[in-house]
Length: 142
Image (cartoon, rainbow, N blue to C red):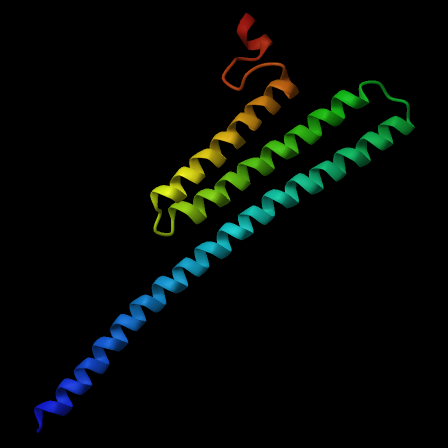
């Protein structure tokens, strides 16, 4: 009879250990999800704030009748979108790779990163007139 309470107490201890490990895994997944959402929120905030600032600066320059307002506006908005996209990609990577990735989740991540990379390259080409891997004209002549 004395061995039965010992088995009961060891089961309780083993169950506590398993629940504790699962609890930590759930905590980690929850923390990673929160970090991923925070990075996403920062990316969206950068896009919104950058666009608002670019709009305000363009309005001020327009009111002063300065030249090149449109080009400066496009460049500022494009830069804020590029930076925001970088953070959005980082948030996707954090959430997908850090928490038990599956082939489906990695595939979805690959598609998202591919689309955002294409957008980044397109924006870079629109803003600077060259691909990201090309040297600026001044450096190419030296």
